[in-house]
Length: 307
Image 1 (cartoon, rainbow, N blue to C red):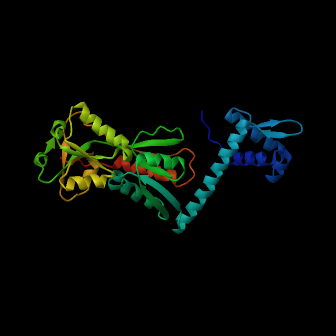
Image 2: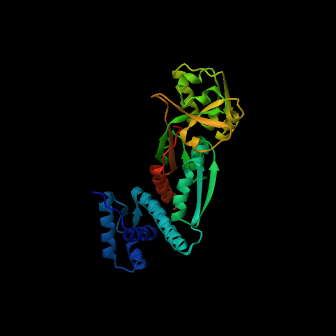
């Protein structure tokens, strides 16, 4: 059965790891040596591995002990900052800074709900929001330039943790006056021979390949393909009457003058996933509270696709 590590025992462990002497460590902890020895033995039994190599003349950390020391120091740093944040939050002070990467579509649809929920919990938090591609967000997470990212899969790096936020279907964005604007829904074959606006692959490989792969499966060949670096660039092409676009259903919640959205019928319309990712070695104590609120906001979010 799993039993959590006690901060009291970890404190004793860290002092002993610093002193490498039971006598000096016990003195610093204002305790006698036998209770300290017992604590360390119980900790080793709990973890199932020796943490110190003991001889009559010396005490040294084992490789497992060195790992625990590094991780315990991180835990105490997080605990210290968490205490500070709670006190600051109680006073209404700045409780810290959170750097969030996001996609353009998530910024329109889901992220505002996440921020609203998190701001109620941490009213003094400061934010940096960066709208970049999912691929760029992954690299920024690994460089610790972002605390958390709202992005598209895949997320395969073992140094990152990720949770799925939502799955949504696609809809069709067409200019007002377009022949497909008069239909309540369209099928995939209706897109054959049309000029299509797509997300530039280097800015959204997952969404780009998912959509074009779906069209290829149905032998749908666009007349022309126009690349948009971002969602807003794609919508500019649609608004201008130059192209139509297959976009995530959540994007249809935003009113775009001159554009109408139509449901795409069919059983195999591809679903698009949105995930939240963060580094396994969490450096910012605001990260996990935000992840919790993001998951809660996503659970309550309902995509309003065209009827």
